[in-house]
Length: 368
Ligand SMILES: NC(=O)c1ccc[n+]([C@@H]2O[C@H](COP(=O)([O-])OP(=O)(O)OC[C@H]3O[C@@H](n4cnc5c(N)ncnc54)[C@H](O)[C@@H]3O)[C@@H](O)[C@H]2O)c1
Image (tube, rainbow, N blue to C red; front, side):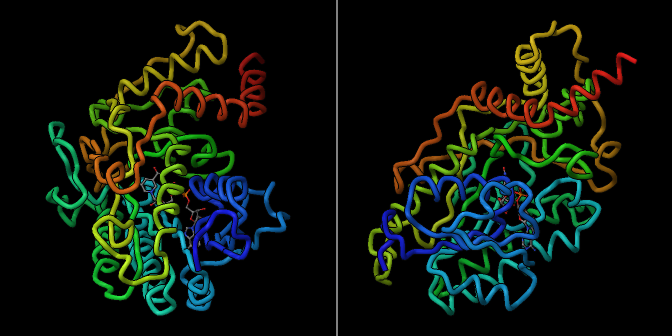
């Protein structure tokens, strides 16, 4: 088999297809290729518009189920995005987070090794661990990894993801690629608490929700940590660069060379978009005022809160995550290009539109 984009006989399995990245990948596969998609998720509320697409088969299923794993591994390319990946759950539900980010993906890796499928596994930039404010570039095959104590269950997710990477890399006959996302953002990310989800979403949805509700943005421990935000559309372009590289010698075992995308972990991020969380909050507040056409003074200023108070006992953080992106550029010719202001405006515009009714309801309520 050859992975040509115009080959309608190819079906790609996307696990976690109903999630943030999965929903964008699904749209891109359907618009840029003739491939079919076998989508698996616990639910598909984000992709209702695709449920009747004749090139798709969707299965509401749990990756914990062995028969589902066997079924997924029958397809030549498997993209595994399924995971519990919301920080507030790392403290409250560590065993479940570890099962989700270790037990389930390694069972899938074993099945893909047996069937010969190419497994594209989504790991995380959190595997770089407890970085400091002046940590330098994080380089895939060089950076040393330091984690917080076991007592700080903040690290449950990162250590499970890291162990999965090590397991995958240890499987002699598995064709694999690992992706380490650096804060992907864009439309359809997470949820608005109390509307279509509960708990604390990741920072973009968290700040967007507070802005729509007219509440102050909460800066955990002053918001001094830095992140490199990456457009989800750039992330999808990365996956297409990966698919394209995989087309070359997809079947031949000897195609696994230093220049191939197999047996590699890639950082996917945008170092040009590095910003402190505090600066992100002020920037989002300004963009939100522009989108709504209101005076910025009418929007509450961000407020600091301690991590333990906000997330609970066991909270710690990585202070900086600056990706080296040299490897993806060298092997795949890929470089993220969307500037942070564009990403934030696009994401906030979507958020305001998507949750607009609620916004109007809140305004009406406030007026009463
Ligand atoms: N978005 C980012 O910036 C980011 C950063 C680091 C890592 N990642 C990784 O990328 C992957 C996708 O992230 P996302 O942002 O799209 O998250 P998401 O939560 O939006 O999507 C994950 C999807 O997986 C599904 N899922 C979870 N457990 C499942 C199970 N047992 N069986 C079937 N489906 C299951 C969920 O229902 C959800 O739709 C995850 O592995 C995550 O750890 C993402």
